[in-house]
Length: 288
Image 1: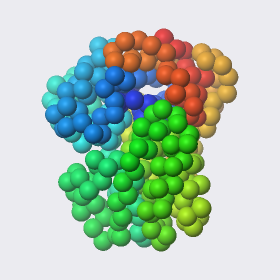
Image 2 (image 1 turned 30 degrees about the vertical axis):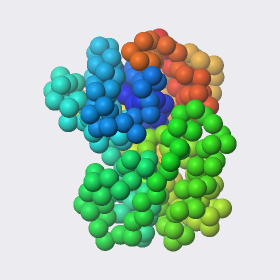
Image 3 (image 1 turned 90 degrees about the vertical axis):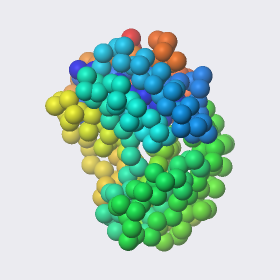
């Protein structure tokens, strides 16, 4: 079994880690666009064109499913990707976890890139799933880029700025960009300092990974319990050196890892190893 994931950069790590935890035997193909990122400021047409190139590179490795692990690409390019690749290759997009956040009750905030904040796409999700909830859209300029570059000072500044815009009565925060899930604990800490000690973080990685496995009828290993109802599942960090076969959820990992940077096979980017998800993939995968 082989699952491909695509993004402009390392935002795909959260979903890749979720696939690895749910299905340790799966081979993974990570396809990204380091020469063209970030995609957020680009026009919809440009995003679609670049996403097609990244998806085609992944498709050449004959995966059983492709996860579009990027909110921006899912907003602008998903119909085009599906028109070209399906039904031969199932394509699974990433949607902000607005529905489960609304089901949790109480007001909540949505952290997203400036391009996504206030967009018709996000407003449509709010209208469809959270019309009766108190929703605050919080733009997070620079946060995705800071995460991509593992710039700790810039991450802290961007997270603090977003936390300052988050209402004190918010009971949950939707992480509306896949990069944000990589710094979930920093976000949680900043919200506590803001006076929101019991906030639940809602990410998309686990749900997207599970949906991809369902689409191909794969057996999956259950993930650990979430933090809070519908909250973000934080990845356990694997132990061991790169290429070592260590268990995940008690199951030995036999899956290989292929990394494509601009279509070229490579190693995991150095910045990926700054995050638990990247270290987990490096520790428990046979790198190809």
